[in-house]
Length: 509
Figure 1 (cartoon, rainbow, N blue to C red):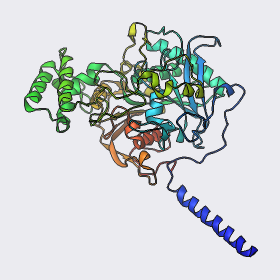
Figure 2 (figure 1 turned 180 degrees about the vertical axis):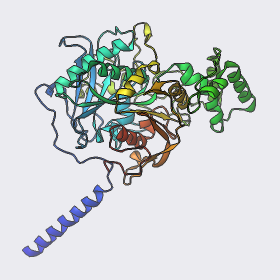
Figure 3 (figure 1 turned 45 degrees about the vertical axis):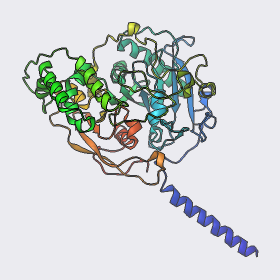
């Protein structure tokens, strides 16, 4: 009998091991968990977050640290930025860290954390947060930072008037962060979205200018649907061409379509597109006179909304009914009004959540602040395509611009217009139109919540250190709508794959 029990025990253990091995191959692309607490020291202990004690989250989110650090060397400085730092368990990451910044100006980076690329997400229309198979922390160490002062959980009095001042404050914070977590010499990557298209290049340029690789070992940047130029170039000029392309979706009548196309001709938009959105850029371009026609945009949005009352500039395929959202979208023009519980009851304003993530209890968190983060709400800096981004590209290992094709806040052709008028590494613009296939490999075994598409997802092109790509099925927030695609081009930024048309599997699969 004892021999039989022994045999049965061995058999059960063998079956369990076989089941575990089979299950492992079906898991999301998580690296195997390694030892926790690798950054827990005397200087970091006050920032430690108990990963098993986040309200409404019924799983362990892993090792992380959160809290406030000053923007200067003064420990008692009242101006402090809030961060939430997640060390990765991926051994391929080594000594590198990615900074994520949302835009606005004044939008909290915790928006990106909860809606897009954090270890857990809370999607509209769902009852609770769920584990994110496509968390960027699966690939590298990531820190989400609320900046500038006055954004999200960051505290103090906004005093900046331009991106130069913003960068100086950020670098002061970053020195403190590096010292606190002993990250001296670590490779730094910066990624951002929307208005962070102004933050990221100015911060990266400031880091390069220090010549201090101990604290600012900047390697590359990545922009998602980023504001890098002026609104006329990135939105108004290409807007009518965009509506022409998507009118099978918008279904605007022939009379209105004729009206807006004639208006685009009168405004100079059509001629400007024909002259400047060419590959390679013209060597002696004609001087196109543009009229002030910003009201045309208002008319277009009103006409689309008559057909689709739930029209959303962030994702033009959105339609009714609108879903309840634990974090209602910011009150920008063109955003539909979502059914939500209001700012006071959003996830990050729950007292127990604030306590769990070391956030200041007396700060009412807003997804996009109602305060002026720039004095008088004016950012006096020139757009980054006026020289700043050129310097960043030339000194970086990799620079990536990703743009969702379904985004109508900022248009992909508007970004290309900016790039075709920008000079870097000895030449202006791209010599060839982006046409290589951007490929996303498949993965099996994901639950319904974490399913993501695969195959050809758009087009891409790399030239002289700059990579541009479109994501055809995504809007303004690519990691939210096309998480596998964003995961893939993050692998490219980090140098884990050589090109975006590679058919190799995910490096964490």
